[in-house]
Amino acid sequence: MTGAKPVLYSYWRSSCSWRVRIALNLKKIDYEYKAINLLSTEYMEDPEFTAINACRKVPALVIDGVNLTESLAIMEYLDEKYPDRYPLLPKDPVKRAQARAIALQIACGIQPLQNVAVVKYLNAETAAGHGPKFAAHWIIRGLGDLEEMVSRTSGKYAVGDQVTIADICIPSILYNAKR
Image 1 (tube, one colour):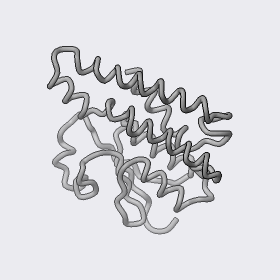
Image 2: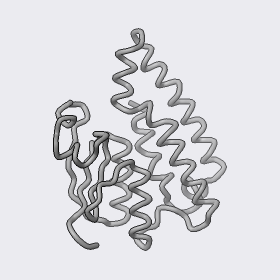
Image 3: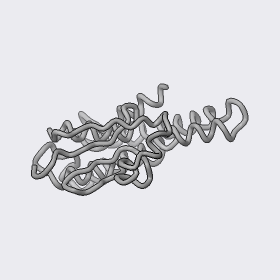
Image 4: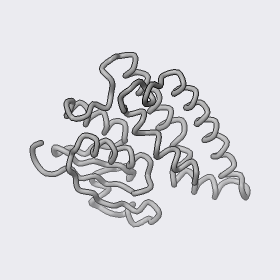
């Protein structure tokens, strides 16, 4: 690797950040961790963080002089940049598509309802108790769909016998669903 050590802006409980930490560790990429407290509003005003990520979300990875955001995009960048260090996507195009579909089901279909900002909004804008009930309904439905998807593609892991981006996305979503 050339240049400065990558810097990951992350929140410890963020499922999206969790994915990138797993990918960095699987690929044995040494990085600096910068904690962003999503439960505080201070990060919204932090000029260093807003210069890195205008959307003020985590994760954000500064690597090779470039600011990258969105966990799936970051993981695919790492896989393309370091293809020989623990590939995160299968070589077979069908398995690649299946791994991406599972990762997208999690990132787009389930995770948004676990997002701190979404949960806060639902709690503020719905009658007492309806926000969590609404989120739980869609999270449970999404997890059911995920289970069906994995049942059709799994081997030793979610898609065949290799850990892929699909497997990287699963643990954090299950952890947050239990909360």
